[in-house]
Length: 407
Image (cartoon, rainbow, N blue to C red):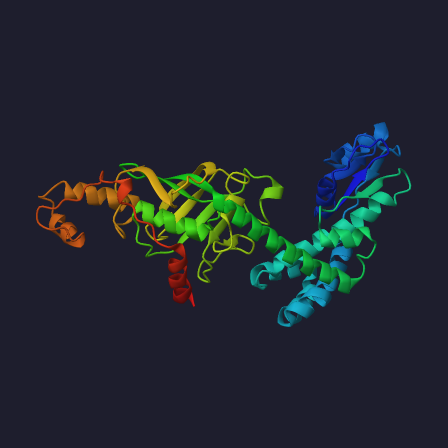
């Protein structure tokens, strides 16, 4: 929301400053260089003594003070009273005695283990409090004049309210948040309509299979991840009989592109209470548009199908283009080799199946043919695939089946 500038116009890295304030430990000590904006880290008491004797005693450097246990304890009490008591009274009644007897660390552990995702709210609360403290620490220090310029967002109702000096009015602020939510929903809908003229191409490769199985599909840019799931199922030849998820490694993404993910991996999937994911790791595939992820945030992800057999596919984004007049989508424009049979035991089981079917003298040969329902003279060909024969379902109809099945 704010950009902080030193007298010479150099910006201050407030995110790193906030991290330094929230660090739970005595060292490293951190100092802000008020001329260059650099953060100086001192790793030990001996290093601090030497540094202060040489240059650190000047007014050029501001010592970044960390939150004490008492201050964090006060924040924890405020969090329980103002957030948990209002939103989750039962959690508040359990968290209070833990805070009293074990301190804020014990309360934090309780929220992480038993708080049904409230650890995220607590961490956000601490970040917000650090931001408030940091704002005053920067602009009110007696040694150097640091300017705070409000940036905000373009056409944002909340930021507009703050610019007018009315951000402290709780009722107006809540109305502004509601207005902004409506505007963002409208923006997403307009974007999806615009995406109706665009298509996206993906190469989907079944990992570790022999022979290599892959498909190239072209789908509308307005597709959700659920729609993409349906297209992958149809193009590969799966029967959509098992759970699935899109798995994304966020380590290569900048913090601004991680979309709230707390860990290194996040999932886009159909809501499933049995998935046992960590809070902040999952997104609803019915609401996430592929155009909002591929290209801008990532080039590829992993599509998991049948968590028992463990079929992992690499979904590679190859490009975006305009729809061709008279064409219908999705399309399968290429591919190679047959899809493994469902429930054959994953990559290892598929290898065994192919080996057995090549040997009529094998003890399981007849059983495998019967399991595959092969007629006399009919053979399973692992290299058989024709993209022309791919038929795509209507994802809206498939979604109805899902909603009925999970309701």
